[in-house]
Length: 207
Image (cartoon, rainbow, N blue to C red; front, side, top):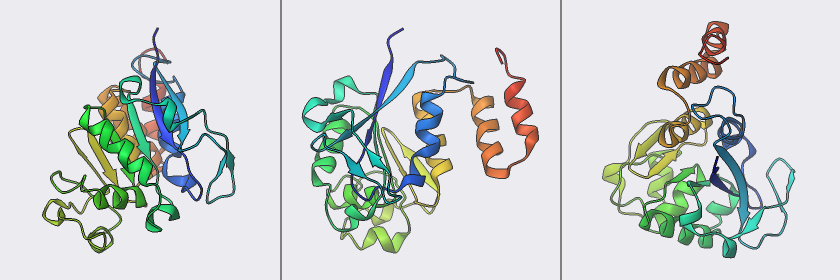
């Protein structure tokens, strides 16, 4: 089986909590429609190790020079202080290339601001940490801002820093990782902590 690769952009100051549910779900074949179909590879601007805001040292699998949209199922852009410092411009350019070629991009927290500064949110429904936060970028897409935890519009997913669960859910839906009932139970389990949803997962076919 040929694997579909999701690429996670890693950089100094990236926010650890924003991508955890997402990459764990993709890498864990349990409950998936096609178990083992997905893998996650980390990518940085240079390929050199980075350090997250939580102090974890991450060694990227590859650099930007080794990645092209036609070899990827999705580009995931976590948030982090670097975006508000107007860094990660190469990642924004890469995101624009992905979208231009019809390959999905998922951005959360500060990454949405990076996309906004590049004009990539001007013509598509989106969300961010708040309307004021994203407006501070000076972008022209304020009329399409949605006050929601996460928004999926075409090949673009955006989310608030406080909504890693909703972010992951939209990515899973976009990539068709789980059956609808499984995705609903997964989300409800982690959102509410109610064990009945775990029972639903374990009762699903093949588990």
